[in-house]
Length: 109
Image (cartoon, rainbow, N blue to C red):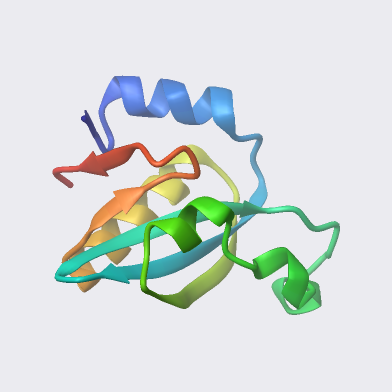
């Protein structure tokens, strides 16, 4: 598993995401396991409030990995450092692991 904030993690993030971008963060519950899943929101909206609901639907991977899903936040993030701080804050606040769209767990914040 890759540690959030490690040089390898930032390198993968730079290859996977073009900033600025909108992100949606979901809380996934399956049994006793809780995770935060992150999805890049495909929208041309100029503000978060302009994003249509369809763009916020969970991915099929999220649906297969959870019994219950809750949308935690939708926000525009301008750079990798801001993304790191957001993910770290959510993982700490919810006391959970974080997974990306590929299902790769990123823990040890």
